[in-house]
Amino acid sequence: MSLKFRIFFLLTFAFFIASNAFAQNKFEGYNIMVDAPDNQKAQACAIRYVPPTTDITITDLDRSTPMKVSNCGGAGSSLTQAGATAMMHANPTTFKWCFQGEDKRYRISFKGDQYAGAVVYDWIATPDAKSLGNYNIRDFGAVGDGTTDDTIAIKSALAFAATHNGGIVQFPQGDYAVGNTPNYRPIALPSGITLQGISSLQSAASTNNVLQKSASRITLNGANRALFRIGECTERVTIRDIELFANSSENTSGIEAVGAFSGAQGFVFERVTFSKFHRGINAHGLEIPNVYWQFDYIKIEHCRFIYITDTAIYSDISNSDWKIEGSLFINPLRTPTQKADSMYFRRAGGILIENTFGGGYHGAFGGTFLNILDSGPTSLISSQTEQMTNSIVYNEIDSPYAGDYSYPITVVNSVFGAPIVFKARRTFVSTGNLYLADTFKADARLRIYSTGDRFCYDMGTLGCQGKTANYFDGATVVFMTGTPTEFGQKALPTIFGTDVQFNAPVQMPSVQQNALPTGKANGSMVYCANCRRNLTPCEAGGTGAPAMVVGNQWSCL
Image (cartoon, rainbow, N blue to C red; front, side, top):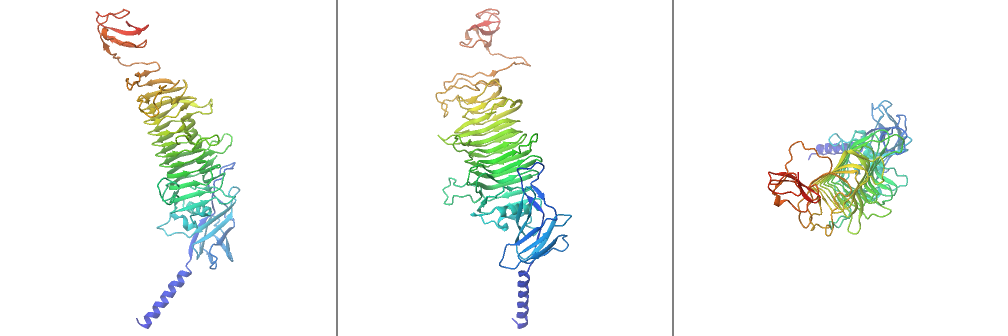
């Protein structure tokens, strides 16, 4: 290599090093607050903005190098620097601010509104176009060691995504601790966000793994708080493939949804594990007279709720629609201080529960699988619960306003052995289910339409030995298909329990007089093919007559 070429190479290399050492990264955002209060007296959306005149402080997170930040040209915002901090104001028209700096991350802080208080975010440089919308939580300073408080990092990532109207926030392998401080506020979820982990295998799962934590989990420390909060004006949020874990079950929630004035809708929880909270999902409105919050269109798919002490899914929302599919509830022991319920809906719109299972343990029964005060159309399909105090309870508190015959509760191809309790008016449609002998606890206000249901007819079924079926207890049976005599059980007839109108001829079975069946109940009818008419008891020798059991003998009409 010639001397001239070596000099050129060294100068080029030195210029490359120098230019990269002083490269300017671009930081831009808005005066945004992502915060969901629970004490508002007027609309308070989860995304709000402070005025552009608000002082925004920029703090250097890397004190090993001098802080060098400058205003972006033409951004319409202003910036002044003093030592390791700088002060800027957003553009008075767009609320947007922009600055340049050598580091990859700076702290942004400003005074929020009456609800948010002080706002602190760790802001990253704007990614290039090919990765914009996909964010790694560790780029915002998250450590994921299970000890370091990662609350600011998670809040920062969500605020950053919110400035771009949504995005995917990735949680790589790690245990992300939040709530380590007494002044902790729940992490608000903005619209259009997806939280994406890598595994929702629950901690201490029976896999025989040496490592007993989930590959990616978020751990809530402290009591009387929620991990995430959904507030007003929030739409299209998804959480998937991650475990939400609580170190305390004292009034804690994995997801709290709360508001009053502006609704929230469109939430998907997919392969999420909720572990050891007081409530897994806790949706409720603020107690403001004549104000009913709308929290709607919630899908819970392939999730697990592990040892939730009060209620795994709790909804105190009117006209809220839920779909729970392929999910599992592992309930703790019900005690006087913990309800250990799977699902509670105070006044729901529509509820669909499909291929979902739950229960406690032998000798350690959980609470109620499905507890409803009142609801619109409700369906349970291919679902089952066992080792529970109750399978279904409707109107547990005996409210005189609960109950409606217009909306059916429909159960299809499911198995329930623990009591099903109804204490109000309701239409119950049941098809192809297995109930134990004494499952139902209902009065005449419950109207039953039953086809193909089983009530311990096969006495070899576990839990059926030595029991006599009470079917639907005291409920009003409108229609119920019967079964033939088998396994030592008396045949169950098909029952029409109300006035019946036939719109075509009715064909009764035809028998000879000497074959009229014995032991039939009064009111039983057949057609006697060779009987004489108007005789009691029936006699042969005629051209045929309808026959009915009257006074315990066959009377030909």
